[in-house]
Length: 61
Image (cartoon, rainbow, N blue to C red; front, side, top):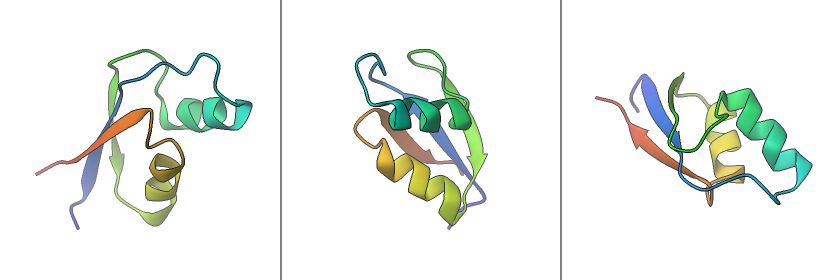
């Protein structure tokens, strides 16, 4: 497991449930194609799994 992961918003959050919007906001993803680097831990992995249809996750090397 790497130390960081890159999370990119690739689909819009418009029309999505409020829970998905809150997860994206907590991850810091506010615009399309925005990329953030987060520590790789179970909490962040769980959040990205919930919105996996909206984001792309890459392991940073």
